[in-house]
Length: 173
Image 1 (cartoon, rainbow, N blue to C red):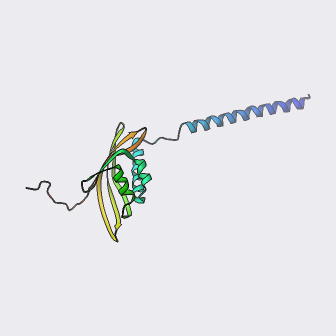
Image 2: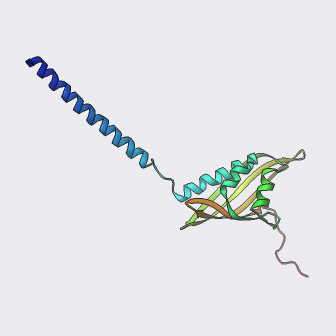
Image 3: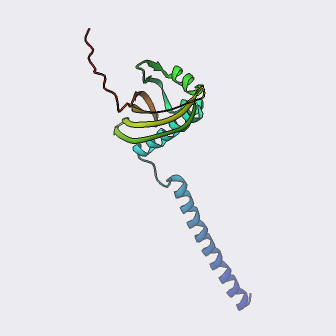
């Protein structure tokens, strides 16, 4: 083997070692990125995203979307004061006779207490029913729980907001 061949073999060996180092570095970075996701959402951020998902599911009357958000033992106090269970809520909200034009939430506050959270806010809704257009606001409160690592809403209540309301709480007999 001549000097040129030895020199060429030396360069090829260095190139292979360098290529292996680059490839190894790339694999380590790739594996680390796949094992450690970019950034995990905080509990508050997760719940706020689920609140938005809930609104979109209500707008679309999406039973499957609602099903993913509601806990198995979910109960809801309707604006008229009646209490309904999960099955009744899903049936009503996924086959509602109204056409929702807009559904916005505002003034949302999330307070996390370990594996539970209290969420409050206000909904501003515009919908059409039987050709008539209705606009109304509901102040709501929800209890969320973490089940098997996922947040689910366990209980909710919606109260109509009426700034002109002047009816006393106590009515004489």
